[in-house]
Length: 239
Image (tube, rainbow, N blue to C red; front, side, top):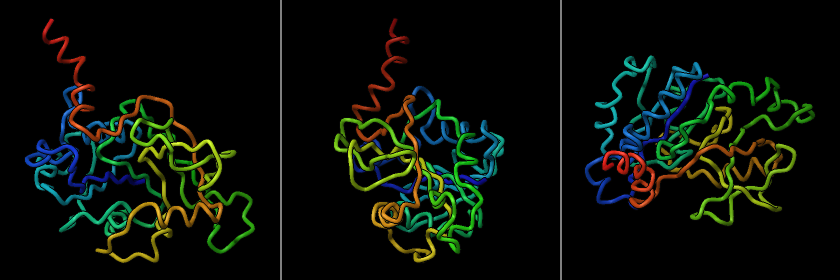
């Protein structure tokens, strides 16, 4: 299985830090956000990694290189301007191949997420040509978290590992998902495409599964959040 890390965003809410540093390279507890993901993916045996870049993307390439120093093989998908989540995937499909892949947002901090669990969440069933397949939750699998302060209403309901756009309670999408490349057949490389419209379409069809992750997880969206995550190190250094 291959992995993709989203790293093309501008990080407007993190300015002025992101004026001179791409958001995924901001350090949390002594290590760039994106490096936490690379190390965790490699630890789980997912060594083939695709990273999409746009804003200050050359700095990400300079930091990570070809991935060999981490035991990974990293390839880059370049975007002149950020193409949004699913636009980024569509633009990188030629690097991701024909099998299901895991994708993770480069600006989340989840140091204990075990990526080994993503390898078998999509079953090997031809649901595309067989609407009567025993398990139809085979197009995508999303990881959800309890709702953070910036998304108190949540995104999706969950019933017996099947996602729903309606119902309650709703949970927050964690920015980690496993996808079949066939999902993106209607998109073209270079097209802007957000996550929600296409994903909600497949959820309405009952084709998306998911589960709740309760480990440490932070969507690092503000300078204050970054400072809070780094405060333990700062306090230790001052003592």
